[in-house]
Length: 327
Image (cartoon, rainbow, N blue to C red; front, side, top):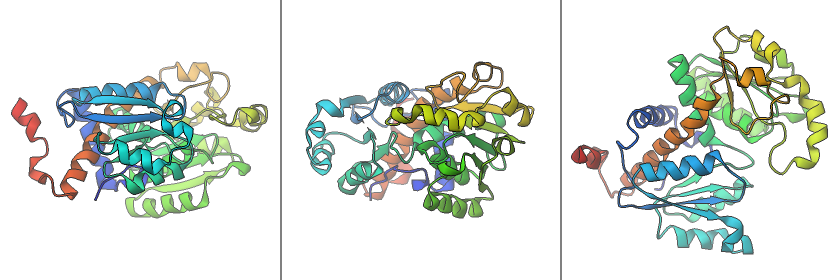
């Protein structure tokens, strides 16, 4: 069995905590675990523009001892209509994992359905699970723990970030609030999945249409751009609808006194977030951006090693053996 990471709940609560613990260790010792020593290659495919994802995966794969094979999908045969399954069958014979930033979740699922190496969701229109791992690592650094914290997201409740906050926060035992206009509700099936998970972890999920009620008492206040890639034609309408959901000084004043602020970037100051907030003392945005590197390294390590174990190619006792011998 190959372990893929297509959405946040492809990890169990215990596995999520394990990945975050490893991310902390890799942040402290960046070259301490080199699962890709060789170097072995990881394919990183981009259908969408990227800064943080491209940089963090490229640097992270290199720090794991590997080679980041960065592919512009538009200039590959994928861009000319080659079936996803055919591209996958070529790549899986030459790389240890495939990371893909694309549009439809169905494209990623098609790849995973035939891949014999881990497939990682680097962003789709439905989920952004690698970002949430980095966010959770950042919150743990600032707060010491995740379970029981109130994490409030203000903005588009129907987008990939809201969906991943629901699932990832629920896995961590957090109380996740989505503050969004009524016409931008999260997908009901995803909300139901998050509620089921939260019932098991001691967390909770809620969708509120009053932005200030969502912000009140939050330990973590989060937002995202109001206009995602592919929604540019809706910009004027979206700005008008979401303007009362901005993370500004008024919203921050309703949160707990030691609340932290997150934004996955790119940020548009004066729209979804005030300049005084993102650049202020309660902002953890730059730590959050750095932690994409550490969280994704931990995730790749986890997926590759677990896939090898489940295929019977290594024993659990062999995990980290190469690193111990190297020292």
